Image 1 (cartoon, rainbow, N blue to C red):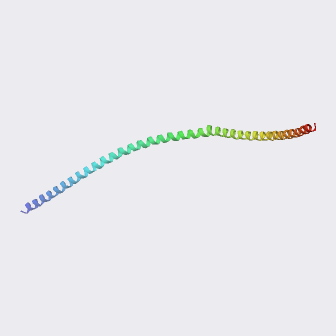
Image 2 (image 1 turned 90 degrees about the vertical axis):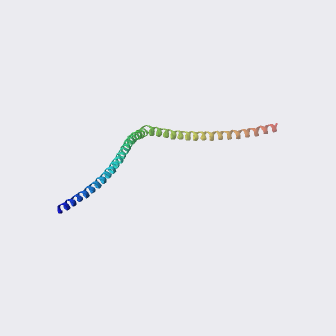
Image 3 (image 1 turned 180 degrees about the vertical axis):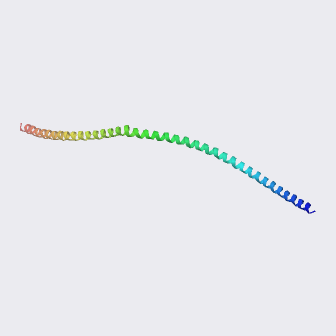
Length: 138
C-alpha cells in the first residue's frame, strides 16, 4: 500500500500544482487584460501627443513666419520710414525757424510803422495847432 499512498500523494500534489497553475493562469490572464487596457490607453495618449506635436509644428511655422514679417517690418521702418520721419522733423524745425524769422521781421516793420505813425500824428497835431493860431490871428 505504500506505493498506492505515494501515488495518491503524488496525485494530490499534482492536483494542487494543477490548481495553482490554473490560479496563476487566471492571474496572468487578468494581468494580460490589464496590460492590454494600458496598451490601448498608451496608444490613445500617443495619438494625442502626435496631434499636439502636429499643432506645435504648425504653431512653430506660424511663429517663424511672424518673426520673418517682424524683421521685414523693422527693416522697412529703419530703412524707409525713419529717414522720412527725420526729414519731416527737420522740415518742421526749419519751417519753425522761418516763421520765427518772419515774425521778428514783421515785429521790426511794425515798430518802424508805429514810429512813423507817431511822427505823423505829432506833425499833424502841430499843423492843426498852427492852423488854429492862424485862424485866430485873422
